Image (cartoon, rainbow, N blue to C red; front, top):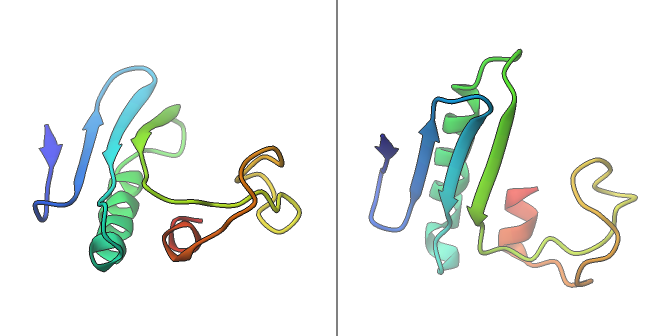
Amino acid sequence: MPHRSCQHVMVEVVRSFPCLIQIGGPNTSAHYPEFVEETSNALRRIKANEYMIALGDFNANVGSDASVWKDAIGQHGDASLHGNGRLLL
């Protein structure tokens, strides 16, 4: 069942194996902090022993500095990192 706090945030947790989290991030930076909070709330609902797959459009550029964001991003993406990407990481 979708969990929605405003018209710009959509996070849905599907109880299955593995647990799926469908994410639709906002297109504007003004709504991004709320999106990050809603995504964090959804992730907290996943038990530690459950497998989880998060998919969707995060609308963020996270850069490619894998040495700084170890185990979070790879090194082959676009080098740009912007504010939404920093919040997401």
